[in-house]
Length: 120
Image 1: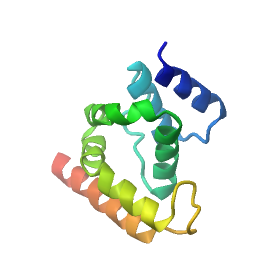
Image 2: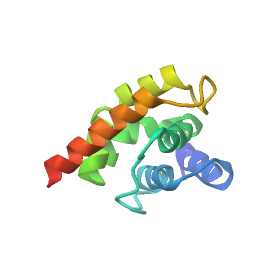
Image 3: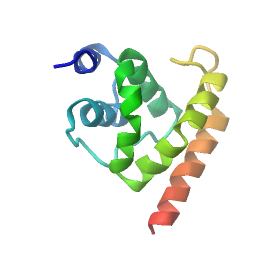
């Protein structure tokens, strides 16, 4: 077991988890598909995913692998840096700057809806 996997296990045991962040953790750290459709739907989900990456920074370089999960994951990963930067600007990690993230939510919906249309 490598240091990143150990960090992920500690995060799973003690962190603020959700379906999308758990999907990331299992796939990126262990190659286990938990749920292909559990992607971040909103800034709350995104915050949990970002907390995972903060806790287990070794996963960040593996993030492109999430594109293998689904077309929606692929679309989110393609614009991850943009979504993350906007979220950090609007609310910060753990909602430390504000209580709402309307611009981040709008961007996420744009990306997700675009991927759904493309898949149809």
